[in-house]
Image 1 (cartoon, rainbow, N blue to C red):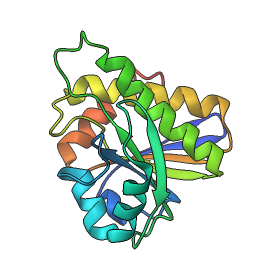
Image 2: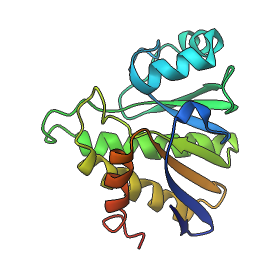
Image 3: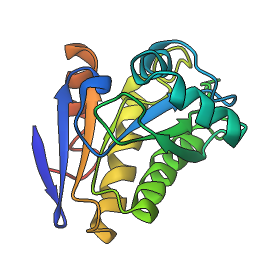
Image 4: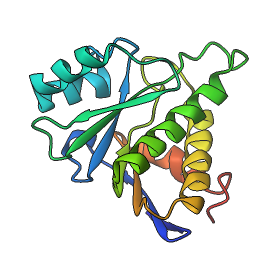
Amino acid sequence: MEFKVGSSRLVLKQGDIVKEETEAIVNAANETLLGGGGVDGAIHRVGGPQILEECKKIGGCRTGNAVITSGGKLRAKYVIHTVGPVFRGGGRGEPELLASCYRRSLEVASVQGIKSLAFPSISTGAYGYPIELASRIALKTVADYLKGHPEIQEARFVLFSSKDLEVFKSAIKDAGLE
């Protein structure tokens, strides 16, 4: 499923983010940047030790922020690591922090001259953010950024399960993309 946002494309698809051939993929990391489970673990496993070594030099990342490393052995040239919020009911700044993850990842991509990037569904796994809420924030934040930043030609959401893809598809209207 593809949408035009300004002069950019926003794509929703089911797949495995480590196999994406965009210039960058976004990693749903933890604050240490030293690997973990889910998307983070898969990126470190497939990308190899070079990514971990670069992450050690960076020294961590705050929730809501984003940093960049090479892609190691991945198809993507870069990995943008962002730390999503742990969901604790939504009243502790989680929506703002989640939006910041997407926005900061896009800002890092813009600064690096990256034209295409792929996002997972940040914070909806082990961090417990309800995907119905997270998908609306993700789509709206990315669409709003793309409207003012034509240098990003494509932003993809790569959802691991068909169920997650369906949730994102149903959030399209809330993001003002229909």
